[in-house]
Length: 334
Image (cartoon, rainbow, N blue to C red):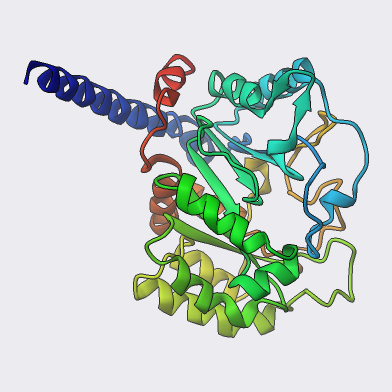
């Protein structure tokens, strides 16, 4: 009984500490929010760091695995992370390629995550889900799923759905969101995917395929043709399906009234080049009317006081359980 009591007290203290850490992290966003709304000062709050272009898949809609070039070594990566933090970044999302493939001799992505946790209140990752990630001290993980098995495998490779689904079930509890890119191939299957994922993940963030190499692009859906699926996504969200995007953001996309404050973003490349602003800088021709990067719209709406988008951001980045050990490291970073 004494051992059980001690375990209970330890767990209670850990939960209270994790809760206070979440509150402190959330409050750290008050400074850039007030600077934006009261002083008109814009600094990047969220950064996507494409730490490598290497990938174990060749997804039909992705241009990044086709790119050549060397990754930075560990010291270079830490220098890039430090520069992002000095710019004001609060949320770091490690991307690729496939970020789990990054290596520098005996250093791995685990070392990168540990370094990032000392600098940022919130450290996340996007992955294609074919490799294990479960014991990395990340606040959130986005796993790519683009439809039920036949559709997903058409886009990302035969057998990949089964791999991703297995990892989601084993490792995704409590932290994982699914990231779905809607294109002409999978648009009709999105409701079926949401049905499969109901109760299996924290939520599904939706974006639309962007024609990086210009038109014609057989995967691109013109904005006017997105309306039916956006109307369906709004209805499904209202019925309790795991659509993470806010209704206000989905409606902006449907009405082709796009809100984007690109100054809130920063992007880092595998070679350490950092660009402030639109996700497409140095990555493709920027055509705002084709855009479907809904996360940028969501953040812009939140900083402009959109209540639904504020709640969406808080739920995605700060409502999940802290990973073991992550909150302790995080507490030292703020």
